[in-house]
Amino acid sequence: MKAIVLKSTGKGNAVKIAYEDRPTPQIRDPHDIQIKILGVGICGTDLHILMDPPLHPASPGIIFGHEFCGQITATGSAVTRPEIGDKVIVDPHPACGYCNNCRSNRPEMCENLFLHGEGIEGQAATRGIFRDGGLASYAVIPAHSAYKIAKDTPFSRMALAEPLSCVGYGIEKLKIQAGETVCIMGAGPIGQLFTALAKANGATKVIVSEPHKYRREKALKTGATRVVDPTKENLKSVILEETNGLGVDHCIEAVGQLLMAAIDMVRTGGKVLMFGHDETANPNIKLGEIVKKEVEIHGCFLGKYYYEKAARIIESNILPLDEIATHTLPLSEYEKGLELLRNGQALKVVIFPEEG
Ligand SMILES: [Zn+2]
Ligand SMILES: [Zn+2]
Image (cartoon, rainbow, N blue to C red; front, top):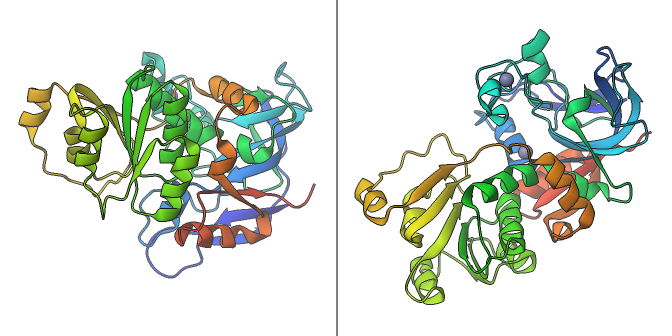
């Protein structure tokens, strides 16, 4: 089968990905399933891995792509469900179940997700980053990481399951209620999913701050009640105007550098969710502001127990996901997908394999 393989990471001009032949993976563990890949989203993390120097670690030699979904073509002898023929979304971070985090109710922070190893540790490694992922015709994954979804669901929506699970878990942390107000900083695919889900949860005002026009216009279609260009308008003034001088109940930071600004946007007792991930960010924090305003600050990284809900949300089509999955391209045009994203001409690009 054809696959997009991560050839190298690190500094220099070495070839980083290649479109090449790989053997079709076969089931070895009785708890595994083989799926025919239907779609694979290109993630901001993938772009970070391919940067020079990379902003995210990964294991060279693996089949790339962690946001994948498929249809089951074979099941191991111990698997009773899901069944052959089922369409499934995939949790690419299959927690080990044995580490300290897994055994203290934090499977999404499994200590073995970032390892490239064998045995129990290797089983947990994130697919498409530290072990073979979805940019190919077939993948073999643990059955417990696959979640059945209605057969008539388009692959372009199914491929949003992983980011939607991360976002949905973040929204659960904030407990957004009907009638509340929300500010979202950054309108990439993650910011757009937050916008759509905040609106679906009943937020009456969803104010989205984003410098790029294409993304602002999209946000108006995914649920924003007001968009702001922070290079031209004062976000704080807009928020005070929109909330009768109070500030928003929730501010979601999907950029990675704007914690202080986010704290500034919320009302007394408001909540801030840090989702944007920038390891280089080291902001000056006015601690007095957090104390005085009694701000709740949450970090959010990966989704916890959200894939079952993600499957129900995606198949019922209650969110404007087709506005977010803007492009579909065949596997052989993967690099074109990267270019569209780097040039800001797409939100989510979903790749599909050409061959059976
Ligand atoms: Zn991702
Ligand atoms: Zn674990």
